[in-house]
Structure formats: structure tokens, C-alpha cells
Length: 222
Length: 270
Length: 46
Image (cartoon, rainbow over all chains, first blue to last red; front, top):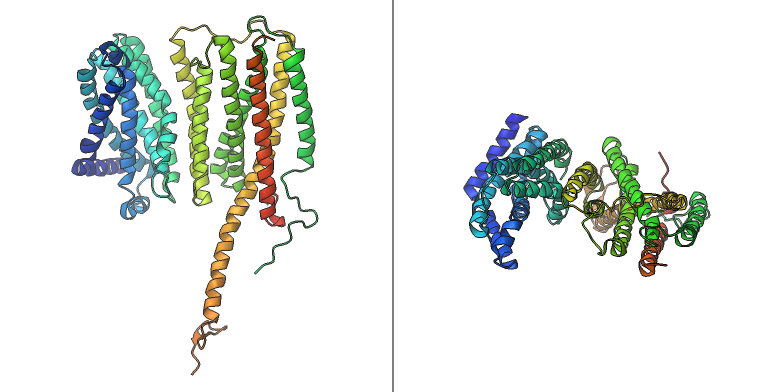
């Protein structure tokens, strides 16, 4: 299963590297959101710093939808999906591979987003350790849940529009926990922040496990 | 072409009712009347919230009934994935929709209750917030069911969405709860510290009556779902039959070449 | 009755929604029953 995962992850990441969709589309999108939120509220430094954690993670959620749609968009051409199905690879392995690729891309996005937010909103970078742990756990949860909903919503017959509706409410807990942890880390309260991170790790385990189990049956007959 | 029997053939019900639903319907109607009497007139106003407590007699039952609906949908979805029989898929869909109706009611009544009690229609109360999230989650589930695609594939996908929603439920509850507990707020979740006997009785009556109402609605909704599925598959079968008929007509009209009945080979008249 | 408006609103909305939904389901049931052939109208375990 893990070799299949590595194969698929490698394929997805190589594709991304060559097409650079994340760098040319998702990153500018993310920066645009940060900018637009700035416009939506007053350029009030205090306010922006206060809402940074929430805005950061909302933006990650939006970015993850793009990544997931892309992750399954590449499979829709030329019967690639059938190829995946018939390849004899372990479906859970395929799931883990795709989720891992999404994970890596999202981490990259978060790093850039972190810089952007620090500069534009003047958010401090305290509690970096907690921030990193939070980001890893939350991103894993998002990648897991997203890949599962992705295969469900991917493909033809106008299913793509379902992804936001299914995905966003489902990962609301991740948003809550990540924003809380992020906020507490920035405020210097690492202890409490880590408790939320632990919760996020639990979410990640649950979502990834569910996704791994569901992916096989969902991949059949698209 | 097969003759379709007349709609009003003897013994053919042209509706989703039955003896069972008739009896149940009467009981439910009576129960609702009792609930109105109890809730609006007989039971006393509470000490803390005055008459606003009367809203609880429908809010709490709506919420519990919502859980029956969603819980049943989750259970039926799991059963569908196991047994793969249409029955479970139809049941899941019906239960989810009826559950969603009660979910909406729980939200509306909860919000209306909030205005005189909290002072505003929404206070990000943990329970109400989780309920709203559930509403959105199951709306997504129904959206998946509404997709035009092969019924078996769709049923499987919908089942997974429902199962995920069920698994997410405790996660959502816990995180929203924790999130709200951090922002100090009078615990208004404790509805009435000293529950008057009559208040409790009215509440229980409400829950029972709503549960029966749910069952009545579920039976009808299930039958509607069943009929809709029959109609859907029949529509497809009819379309295929019509197409086949067209092909045959096409070929039999093409003389002098005639299809040889025994060999199926085309025979050209010399 | 204190807060009468809210109490009445809540009960009224509930009543309207429930009766409306019930009517909708029954109506759909009748319409579909007419379109589906007689033998196929009820679920029976096979």
C-alpha cells in the first residue's frame, strides 16, 4: 500500500512541478484573498492582527479546494481514472498518495501565506513551534477529508460544484481548532494552543482513516 | 407493446396511505392537539423565562426528532453499504429529508426562543451552532442524492457522505462546545434548574408526539421515494423499449431486404 | 402571556411547516402513484 502511495504521490507532485498550477494559480489566489480581506476591513492594524488566525485558515480552506479540484482534474482526462482503477494498485494507497500530494502543496501555500500575513497584517510570529505543529495536523486533516470528497465530487455531470458544499461544513471543526491554536500561539499561550493541535491530530487520524477506507468503493464506477 | 393496467384497477392504491398510516395519523393528530393544549394553555409559564418556555415544547422535540432522522439515515447508509439492497438507500434518503425538516424547525424555534431570552436571534450557542452545521451537512447529502446518475453509484456515494457526516457529528459537537466554552457566557443551555412537573410532562409529551409524527412522515416519504425510484427506472426502461421498437420498425420497413427470422441474416430478394 | 409574539410565531411556523411538508409528501405520493403501474406501487420484501 505504501509503495502505491509513494508512486501516486510522486506522480501528482511531478505533474504539479511541471505544470506549476499551484505556483501560478493558487499562490496568487491566496495573496489576493489576503489583500481583499484587507480591503474589506479598515486597514486597522489591531483588527487585522486579531483576525489573522481565522483569516489565515479560511484562506487555507479555499486554497485546499483548488488543490483538490486540481488533484482530481488531472485524472479526468483520457480515461486516466479507469487506468488508476485497473492498475491493480491498492485504493487506500492511491488515496494516501493523492492526499500526500495535496498535503505537500498546501504546506507550501501555507508558508507563503504565513509570510504574506506577517507582512501585510503585521502579525507576529510568536509560538512558531505550535504554529508548525498546528499546520501539519490541520493540513493532514484537510488533505484527508478533501481527497475523499474530491473523488466523490470529481468528474462529469456537474458534480464539481458539490465539492465546496460537501467539504467546507465537514471540515468546520478543523477551522475552529486551527484558528484557536493559531491565535493562542500568537498570543503566547502555547500550552492551550497545543491542546487544540492535539485535537487536530485526532481529526487528521479520523479523516484520513475514513478516507482510506471509503476511497476504494468510491473510485469504482465513476 | 405491453398494456399498462388502468390506474383505477380495483385494489390499487393511488396514494401512499394504508391502514397503518391511517391509525397512526389519527393518533398523531390527537397527540398534536394534546400538545397544543398542554404547551400553550395548561402548563404554567416558567419562573425564569416566563412564557418563552412554551417554545421549548416544540424546540426540544424538534431537535430530538432531528437526531432520529439523521441517526436513521446514517444507520441506513451503513446498512446499504453492507447489504446493497435498494430498501436501505430509499430509507436513508427519506429519513434524511424528514430529519432535515425537523432540523430546520429546531433552528427556527431555537432562534425565536433566543430573542426574548438572550436578547438576540443568534448567540453562537454551542448546540444551535452545531445544529446549523448539521443542517448544511445533510443539505449536502440531499444534494448528492439529487444528482442525475446511475442509481447504484449514486446510492453508494450518498451513503459515504452520510456516514462521514455521522462520524463528523461528535467531532463537530466537541469542537464547537470547546470553542464556545472559552468565551464566557451564561450557561443558558441549562433550560430550567427546577423543572416543574407539568413542564416536564409537556416536554415528554412533545417528544413522544413528534417521534410518532416523524414515523408517520417517514412512512409516507419512504413510499414516495420508492415510487419515484420506480418511476425513474421505468422511464429509462420505456425509453430503451421505444428505441428498440424504432429499430425494429426501421429494419422491417427496409424491403426488399428482409430479416430472416431463423438465421437473423439479411436475405436479399434476387 | 409574556413574549406572546414569539411564542405564537414559533408554534405557528412549526405548524405551517409540518402541515405544509406533510401535504407536499402526500401530494407527491398521489402524483407518482398515478404514474407507476399498479403492480409496482408498494415495496414488498422479495
